[in-house]
Length: 171
Image (cartoon, rainbow, N blue to C red; front, side):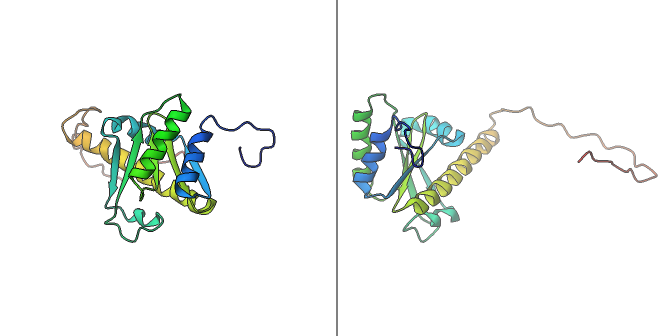
């Protein structure tokens, strides 16, 4: 049930939160819908996950002590059959006991913690890392010869002005 909202109806995905609580003995489960996590879940859905490694921010995840850590983020296919999806969440959590979160394909990130503070920290860390991965993959695509944006043309050199030019900026 949504915290602090008397009379509000629970999320349609409540069974997924319950599966995490029961599998991880979590005190809090958080779920986000960021653009980057949704895009990466689509880009890596066929691989059923993506790996985050080499980032200093990984040390913000509970139990991680080095940037050399490799965090697997499973991606589950979304399903409107929530009880079946909850069983798949339980299976993923059993298979990957050290993970700190998972992506629901085309939907968002789920993460948890012993308490709300730890869960919030995991959201912040994982969302930062997912956005970083998304941006890096975008830059890699640009560097691979895939032309997403038109190439900038070098401006022709101008003759030097005898007086300095003053700019008035609108901000």
